[in-house]
Image (cartoon, rainbow, N blue to C red; front, side, top):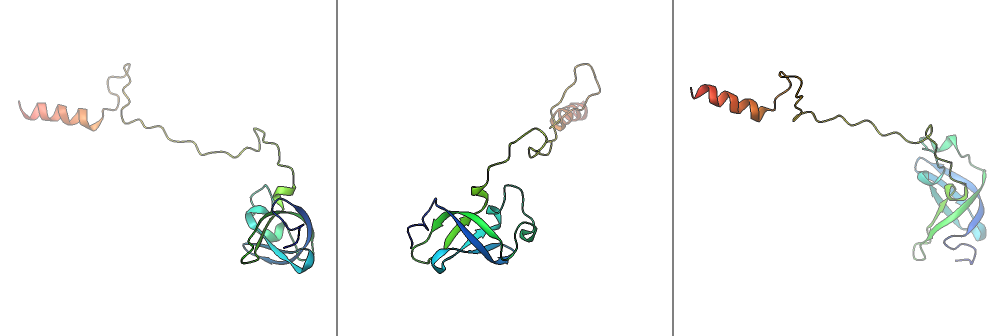
Amino acid sequence: MSNTIQTGNILTGKVTAIKPFGAFVALEEGKEGLVHISQVAHAFVKDINDFLSVGDEVQVKVLSVDETSGKISLSIRETQPAPETTQENRPRRPKQKKNNMNYQDPENKEAFNPLADQLKAWMEKSNK
């Protein structure tokens, strides 16, 4: 491999093909690498065609070079500054439901009773 196509180097290439899983980018010396769809942008990429087109000139960072197979893994995302995380654009997690199975409200005498407590009361009634 060339001295410039080494892990960590940033290169300029041209998008030669787009597939649902990523884009192929032509590099120097007739070499070609793949930018996986997860490495296209910091944002979620549902359709790679919304971000890239064949013929686009892009900056890529070499993530890995497999000497035996000749495969070159590239990233466009790694050449761009990460967006600042603010309260508005931070990914949200769904709220988890509280488990009220053992909840006893001392103010409410008719609060939910766990099945084990209810079973004990039924057993006492049946033994009378």
